[in-house]
Image (cartoon, rainbow, N blue to C red; front, side, top):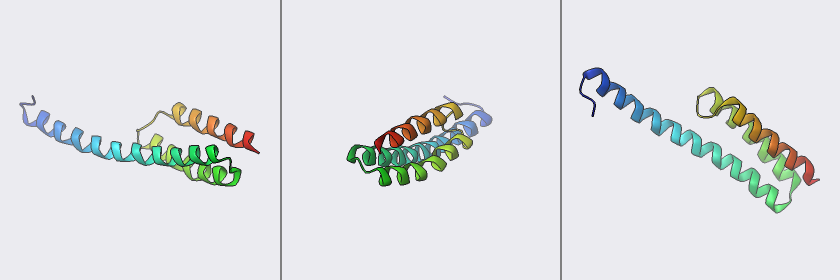
Length: 87
C-alpha cells in the first residue's frame, strides 16, 4: 500500500484516470456496437452513418491514450471494408 504522500497522491490520480478511461472506452465500444448492429441488419446507409460517427470517437480515444493508434486504425479499416462489402 502507498505510504509516502507522493505515492498516496499517485494512487488517487490513478483511480481518477481509471474511471475516466473506463468511461471513454465504454463510449467507444458503444459506437462500435452500433456499427456492428447496422452491419448485422444489412442496412448499408445506417452502417455507413454509424461508421462515420464512430471514426472520430475512436481517434479521440487514441489522442487521449485509451487505444493505440494502430489498433484504432485497424478497427476502422476492418469496419470500413465490411461496410463497403455490404452494398
